[in-house]
Length: 395
Image 1: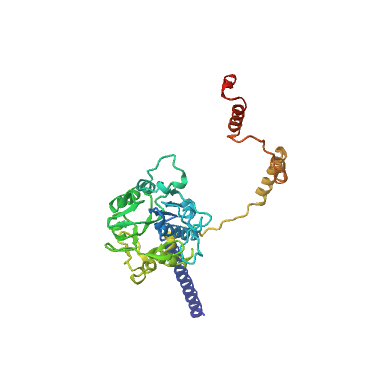
Image 2: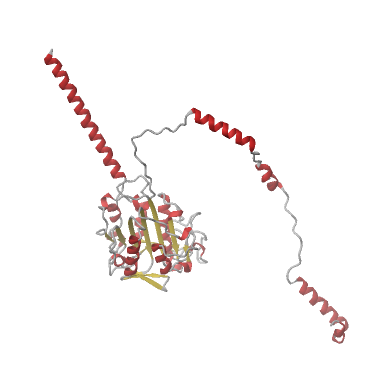
């Protein structure tokens, strides 16, 4: 009996140990999953999308920017967190055979201009000064919210730029340029002012890799369409429009992004491989030495999508109020309802009358030149009848 009792106690203790070990393993797995879920450390996403080129022959640069704009909106970044800068309005250009549209494919099935594009800086507002002011937050107090980058130290920011460039510079509207040193200093100001958590910089221009050579601020990952000494080539010529529709690098990046959804686990290493030299002709480059995380652990949606965070808790939260509290609130609502006169929306805004009322007749007013023409006619008739010698009776 004693031996059986001891054996039972030993088995029970072993079972308890096994349960505790399994529980600790499960808890550690949950913690690992939670840590993996929150590994980026950011709570909001922003995008600054810049097209620096004007004139019809740079149609592709506008299409590049609008295509990226469409992708980030599709993945969940709202317009309130996107600063869109377009140096020219190709949709309303007189040369556009299809007004109010901008296409990125030859079949003209995808209108990237869409019906809800919110351009924050347009035409001659797209300058080096305004771009740097947006990044650093040094803008006048009267600037509306839609033209501000209201990021903080928990923001992941995507900065996309396209246009004509060279070794160490990017042109703005063929009238000025931003250098790689100015851009690097602006990013350093952003870091010192705690305006970003992580920053992804993408540029599609000739010799694009030269633009990130001078970066020195932490947590920046950079991609470029070409190396120093190489040109970034256009793609998809359209005889109907007479220009190329997109650049090669952005075309293949967006082709890759079309396969991404907000729940995708695709990482930045996959983005690095989307446009090999066989497709781009130029050699795309990237820089990750300033970035603290391994690119294979950085999701595409950490920059191109919106943040969907949850708070993990072990406590039980009751979503139903007690019956007594509900009854008290019901009585209070009844008492306040007796004191207040109910609103009558039909009397305030007679919608039916507005819809069915007859249009009001407009008061007739003579055209602007009617009176002058009438006086001229009277004078001509007077001259023909009496001659110029009777003019003294008029004046």
